[in-house]
Image (tube, rainbow, N blue to C red; front, side, top):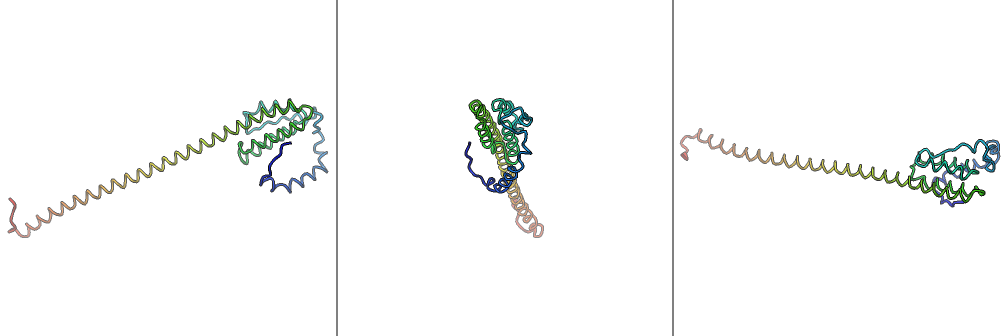
Amino acid sequence: MVTRLPTEEGFKCRAAASDACIVLKLLGSFAYGDSNYTDPTKPSANVLVTPKTAPSMENDYLSLYSKCPFVNITLASCATNFDLCALVHSVDFCANDLCHCMLDAAESDVQHKSQCLNSVAHTCRIALKHSSEVLMTRNITRNFIIAALMIVAAASVGFALFFMYNRANSDRKKKEEGGKYLQIHTVESSRSVNPLLPSHN
């Protein structure tokens, strides 16, 4: 079996999982009467579930059911749990858990262990490749958004500086023109008041 490291979420649900195991030990035989792994003809073993959140894996995942006929129920459970995890977190976050679940299933099918493990290893590579592509796409999108925001911010700062520069130039020109006007106006006013002022003509 694959050894898993404990997670914070695992600690939180440990008590509830322990209680559920007790109930399953008492009443599980009624709920799982058709879940005998040694009999692939049971109805529950024919429900072939594939990860809906990773459609590119569908064909490879379906092949697992024929390569690992005695653990079809576990494989269906792995796919369902992966989809539930991906809805809460993301595909790349849950891909490792899916691989661990498939490897556990392969280890359980003793009669077909060799072919099952090979098929699981191939499907796991597909899952990890898909998760890497999802992560890369998300990073590219995030970087594009960050770059766009930086461009908008730089353009805004540039526009603000350009506006302030133009306004400062406009104010300076107004002051210069105002000073000339006041100087001329003052001389003419003085002559009108005192016509004896000498003329430059």
